[in-house]
Length: 639
Image (cartoon, rainbow, N blue to C red; front, side, top):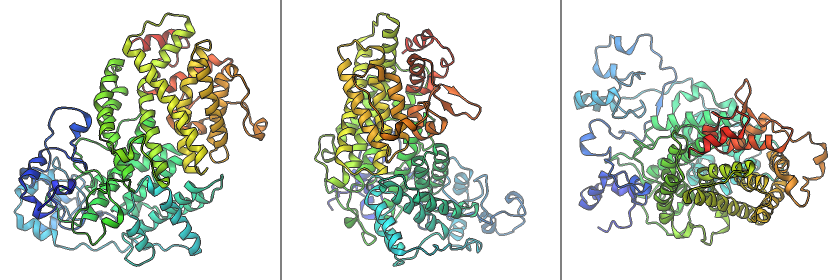
């Protein structure tokens, strides 16, 4: 049998007819992602990683005997503790869901319990017949979980909202399988998981309205308000794939709507529920339909890229782990080639599909994880270390990015946005890596000191400037050529503002440099695009004002905002704008509520000091309360 076209599913032994293939079995000693790459190969390391799918681990971790690890803990509180149950039947005592994860030996309706749990050890000790008896017993659904029906809404309008979601947003973040959802929506097949499905449908509608809007209407807020009214504690006590999808989309919607910490909390809920459902693992010998397996992978990796992206945005520790994750990347496949009737996995079409972007972004985050850990840790990485990490991690990722999704590839119109965001994202990450060296040079120039940077530091400086310039040019070209909708505007502003601050800092401190004309051009281009974003992104106004206040005096021409600019208050960045722009504009002062604000200083140097602290926020708080450049120089001389 020719298995050369099969992806990771065959490596993980999903099909019996592949389980005996010695070549494939030899590969199971590594964590394998969907293109056959191990974690180490993606990261450029040489060590081997042992898979948790080894045969000797089967007694500890096993696939569920039913379709998933779903659970229902609503109303599951018992009068007596599981530890003192008087039930005489062993099977009956094991049916209890216990918070210690030590008594539940069956995976059915208990959630995923990994090898470190007490239940895993008990599985090894308990006779198989007890487990088999338990796995086939039934648990009645709590009657208090009611099916929530949609209120009366013009079906044509509802259809339009769902269509809008799949037309734009879905092409970048395919967490929902479109054919399956549309069949459920049309009631061709059963809608799953009670109230969870309606929560998912409503947040999808809200995202469809928000992402495709061409003005600042608030229709999506009404839809999301209804979504929240459906999201009860009872609903959250029922674990399901549908609920993970809904929570993930709620998180991303909240971030788009400038509620970053609410988004972060919802993301945490989604991640915990996903791991409890075992979405982070492909189980050896688990015979579920290929489409069901792929949907699990798409959900896990879409959640992961949202969570990791927000983690980088907020400079926080990771919630979604990499250690212990043994799940293949989503396949690059067209929906028509993998359906509910498919019994095997199709080959890669070698062209862009709906799943290309999430697959490529997932590989990027896997590759950049070691770099991110270093830049949020102490001691701070040197330029040499960062350059080496880039070559090993980002270099490997770029080499393995398919030619049809490479930076210079010709992209079909409906995938231009997802492809553009991918390019902006990796350049933004490199700017995060190297911008401390831009700050150091700016401070040397301001103080009139000689910058005797190492060749590696100079290379880091130049890469940061080049990435900023290329990002500005790319975003400008994208905005000129594509629809002016809110989803595009959100990402354009997020990446553009961070990029524009690089030439802004350089021009403010080295206005007589031979590179100053180029920096001015970049800033002018940025301001023009940001001004064009104002009608569809309210945060754009503040970003424009911040840039003008920092370096407007060094520009050759004034850069006014649209006609109502004079009605605006002075350019002071408020806490709600900090929330809206996330870590891109996190600044040095903190109020009693923990919100950081950029305070308007008496001169541009005060404002520039505030900008410095947001450019590498993980460590600069140590020196942020010191008003002199010397504290910054002491810090930056250590890198």
